[in-house]
Image 1 (tube, rainbow, N blue to C red):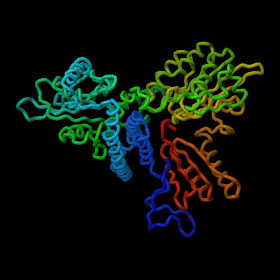
Image 2 (image 1 turned 120 degrees about the vertical axis):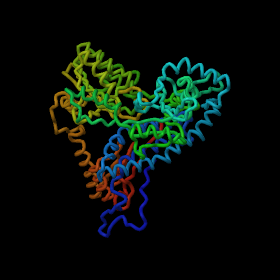
Image 3 (image 1 turned 30 degrees about the vertical axis):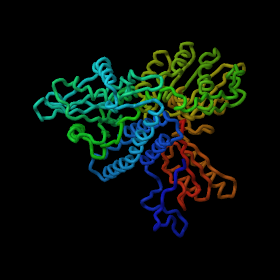
Length: 608
């Protein structure tokens, strides 16, 4: 989907008589990062709105839109609101941005709800998948769900009333809760209570009346709501309100006193669950008294309150999305084995010596290339050392057992596990400790920066001496996400490249610093300077009448200097095509500024 050029005010010129580009004051040269991220998530939502997308995949995209927003509020808005509560000119701008974010999101949330109610749910019902409200259940089904509640839900629930002896309960991040207004018989004095919906129980419960032709489900929230009398016997339930709280995940480690990085990150994770709330979501038509109790108890600002037309967490449909029906899902995709690593190739290392191997995942198999490389190195008696970085390895990573196996076999094994990988910290801490227990040399990362590189190096004894083999990739060492994300992997034994990969690991483990990398672009050492030099080189070629063009693919484009260099290159007419998955702060197609720049965002089945 091409990002359109911004509309231009008719009365304001875009360039002055000197020919220098002029962008109106209301249109700065760079777009706002947070608002552009919302535009990226709008493109994700468009996949759900597209009737060409298979039905259960549409439901899945509705959930992805929600989980993306959750992470956005925790990471980006979590850092914004603490500033916005301070009385300063800067906080005034932050409050204005917070309001702009809410205004931008409102129509998206309406579209999301409309898609679910008017298209996805009716079409699922027509295909025999019925998502029902309590009032749509038959008498026998209601009785069955009451028995289910007693056996499976009631023992897990904890009703929490608020009075002078019971303070307002802690509301955990992203949990869905039921606020309840209670009274004693004969009294009009309301008592506030909260019931947390247990995440350990499926959000949609299949009814026993389901058949092969028709599968019927009712929501957990409906089951709990219609059995509240069991939780509050002798009291009257006057009103209920579903609500959901998002907490700030931006924990500043400067205030943490710790002995090392592991302890610092562990403390950040502990503090995160206690961070302030940055968003309150509730269903439209909520009882004003119940809403006021939550708002006042948790101190939400008006712009932090989101009234939703429909479900608070559309990711709750994940168990519905797993229903097996080939007509409701994308066609199965089986990655192909890279030709250089086909069935006839029994010696992986000789295949790499024959020539560099570039694999494009998920179209080419991650398991048959990257995982095979590490597995072969682990089991090869001539391999002396393995070093690799892990950013997000996943819950069931095959690479952790392989590193342990290699260490137990007497190989030198070093592994950098980035403890600061957002929302994966707890998992990575666990993996780091398991590797250390097995004798692997574990590096936790470098203070002040995240190690986002995905690379591995293998040192092998061969007849002509030691040879190094390397993997350099754009994606995580995670076989699960490698089936869903598009990434590139290079397997090479080119001595010029592998020597520099070795230097990178020396920097990571020994803190040595090398500034003269010739073949690798290493941030923050030389990557930005080399990118700027390459952009200017193409601009010089264009200005001299030589063939020149830039085609670049990136996750997002934010750096002001890179954007400025691209604008300068566009000023000489250089054709620039940018493939940007997420947010892009550069304005394409602006006369006098970026007419020759085109920006495309590719959103679809696989995450770019």
